[in-house]
Image (tube, rainbow, N blue to C red; front, top):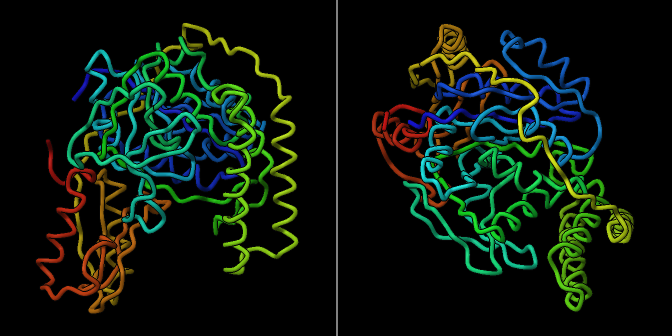
Length: 411
């Protein structure tokens, strides 16, 4: 375990319930030296104040739709050696910080990124990726059981996902933090490019996992159907001005716009959008792109010293436990599991039906990990559709699948 202090920054706007769930997850982190900074709108601040550990949080009121400016406020408040970021609609595995920050013991590592599981709690939403000079992402094939330190070649950068990333505070200050010209989208991509140009290494850590739900916001619905593309267009214009040479911008934008049009048409075909909505959203994309070409881009300068001292979140060593259940006794087992969580356990409730149903994993508002599915069904979506097994073998397989992330084993 590292001896580095960590500041965890959560930006939230319009998602108070999701924020509370995220904070319950953060409260179970098995890392001794971290603080939690919430940069949120009035509803988010009010929700955070209802939690039993609210006095142990740093709360910063901010109600503008600009994630980069909000993150910079978090950086100003952060007093840790490392600053980690997670979205309000995400929940970390209990060992998240321990794995994510371990590579920082190497002096050449300035940034760290982990893997992100999607809505079903099992499939990966994002793994390892690099970025080319046009901002496009490309998958990387890494060892799934260890951190890999990467020094990108010229013209490339290493991608860290906004909901699962960490940086040395000193490097963020040196680079001016996030560029507020990116109100939404490409904010961390721009930072990744600047890190690479400055010669810093990034470590990608597969075992540092968060679960990300893609909750609704002003830009998309819960079904991930776009509501507005204005800020995406604006962010691409800003990115071009900073990182793409003049001669390549027209072709680059035509390709990006065509890609967005195809994405919208797919939503229309699946019933998520009406034809007139496709035209409207493309118009908003174009309007944003035009505005982004004129958007001011002042140089960001952040205070070298934090606004206040480190405020350690009360660390509580916890045992991670697995309880097995069946559908007809699930309700009673869930109540028992809730009590165990209140008494300090990290609890996973695994309910297996005598079916081939796919498995789903979720983290509840009361701090309980729940996995439900069939005894013979898939958890890993790349596995066999049906696999005959015994109950004890299946339970052990599922325990092993998340043993290191959930903290069933110590390493």
